[in-house]
Each structure stands twice: as structure tokens, then as C-alpha cells.
Image (cartoon, rainbow, N blue to C red):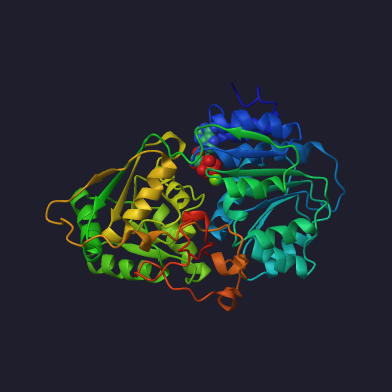
Length: 445
Ligand code: ADP
Ligand code: MG
């Protein structure tokens, strides 16, 4: 099967060939024909398997083949949960649209809106955006959604969870009812699928691997360690193995800062990326990490979704995420486009329940080891201490705002909920015994 066989135009085929793609990936092969037919789709495929081109190429073809007024009203909108992902998807759209007469643009928070407004005023065919800034720009009448024919939600399950769903619904309310909707992610929970059905019309469900599964070429390992030994173990792993590019996930922004400081103290070059950093610092940290000017990027889950760092060899979970789907996304930053990768999780006694939840989702046991000299001595807490976990979806209505969640706009501080991390033995909100679907959990990066 070739890209031309899928019905894509020569102009688009030429652009992907220049990217070095020789044949479509399985998700591209399955999704592109349906999208070209104008169908709504709910597509799930593993991380790193080319979902971006899977939705971008057919949409570009549609845009370039249909007539539009000279002023170029916005006709396709791609929404992403983080600024970094918006920038990356935009880069892809730009590359794929090199040989078609289509104007792409990107808008996200944390930077001055003036140039975004100017770009939008000049006319844009396809826009990649984070929801908070997009709504701000809409309120300022810098953009109209009245002519949007195609709506794409990348990382769709995140976009439809509690932090974002209100903004998404608001944006949709300004769009024509008749439009094509494309939802893509590596993970979909049952609850989110139900929510998605409210947006999609007669969707085709496209799936390329068992849902929520991870790439086969990523080996994952758990090291059981005491909480207070995690930094030491991290430094040891990096130094002993001479790792030069490692993405490390922490649970909190404060934790990311602390670990970065300790790595620097140990003479390991590192930077942190999270929602309390300025956009300039975030962009710089990611760039330096990608071009190997620093060895370690310490991140909150802000970097878990969608970011493509080609050939990234190692991911470390300094702490396990309390939402099992986030594990799939975090470790999916390695092993992309068929490459191999290694994901290591440092798990202390308090996190045993999280490991169980992850193993349940993956339907596999994670290889669990102990490092000589770092044998754990902490004892496990009572079982119920770790029952609160599911992020995003629940009946209880909480005032929430996507801006607070990903800090994608300047007013994020105002919206930030005061919320204690629940690792410290606090009583979990959900003690009903209904497990992870019972209590909505607000995600912050
Ligand atoms: P996903 O969204 O599924 O996680 P991406 O769209 O970010 O994956 O793509 C992952 C990587 O695979 C990117 O570096 C991209 O350039 C590359 N890629 C996409 N499609 C192909 C293809 N058909 N052949 C080879 N590489 C591809
Ligand atoms: Mg993606």
C-alpha cells in the first residue's frame, strides 16, 4: 500500500516522501480513506504511530480541493491539550502542506496575542490551537468558527475530560452543526467514548491495536525503591549507563524543580518543563533537550501527551502517574515510529496500587526488580490509601477550566485550584469503594 493508493494527491504524496515516509502506517492506512469520504471517526492507535499525518493529510486534501472565498475563512480546526503539542502539530501541518495552496497557523497561550491576531486576520485555512487562547481570540473577534467544516481533537480523550470539556463544548457551540469530526488518541476510556458519541455523527471506529496498549518495542521495568532514595537511584541509573537523553516524569511541578536542582548538583545537565514555567523557558527546555544540549528533561504530565522526540531512548517515571492512561502516554514518548525504547518506573511502597491499576489497564504485569544496595525498607500503606485515581470524568460537577489545567493562557493562575497532592497519605476523596471511576480528579501539570 502506498500513499497514492489511499487516494491522496501527488502534492501531498511528494511532501510525505520528502519527510522520508515510504509507506503509510497502519492507522494512516485505515483512517485516511474514511476521512477522505467525509466520515466522522474515532481513531485509536498506539503512541508514535503517525496519527498526526493520519488526520492532517486527508484534511489538507479536502481543503485544497474545495472552493473557498478569497478571504480564507477558517475551515479546519485542530485542538490539542498543550502548547508544545500545538506547535508540533503545526510544524507537521506546515510540512505536509508544502505543495498545496493552504494556509496553516497556530495559536496558544503564554505568548503575546498580537501576531496571532494579525495572522488570523490575513486568512487561515487550517488552525492548530489550544482551547484557552482560542476562546480568548474568539471573544476578541479575531477568529470565527462559522465556516469550520472539520474539527479535529488530537489527544481526544484528554480534550474531552473534565479539564477541557467545557471549553471544547463552547468552541463547538460556535460551529456549524454540519461538520466532520475526527477524534484521535492512543487511549479511550469507556466514559470518554460515551462523551465522544455526543460529538460524533455515525462515526467509523478505527483501531489498529488493542486499546490502551503500548508499543512492543518499548521494554518497561519497575524498580522498587524507597521514596527517599529515588533521586540517588536516578543519578546512579543515568551515570552508570551513561544515558544522554532521558525524559523524566514527576508528579508535581515542585517535584520537577527539586529533581532538576539535584541533577544539576550531581553534574548532570537538566531542565524542567511544567505549567509554572514561562513559555519562553518551556520552549527553550524542550529545544535544548531535543537537540541534545541537555541530557535530562524533567517534566510533569504536560509533556506526556503527543510530544514527538524522535529516537528518544529512555523515559523514567520518577513517580508513577495516578491515572493509568497517563502511563501509556508517558512511556509512549519513547519507542516512536518503530524505534526501540526503555521505560523505567521507580516505585515506592505508597505507589503499589498505582502499579496494580496500570497493570490492569495494560493487561500485563510489569517486570519488577530491586537494585542491589537500594533494597526497599518502607512498608506498604493500608490498601485504601491509593484508591483515588481516575482523572477526569465523573458526575460531580466541579468548577474547572482547561486554562488552569495546562496553563495554556495567561490567566491560568487565577483559575488554579488549590489541591494537595494525594501521595502524602491524605484521605482520598473517593472512599466509596467504587474504584477509579468514582471521583473526578482534577489534573494539573
Ligand atoms: P502519534 O500521534 O501516533 O503519537 P506522530 O504523528 O507524532 O504519532 O508520529 C510519530 C513519528 O512517526 C513522527 O516522527 C512522524 O514524523 C513519524 N511518521 C509518521 N508517519 C510515518 C510514516 N508513514 N512512515 C514513517 N514515519 C512516520
Ligand atoms: Mg499524536
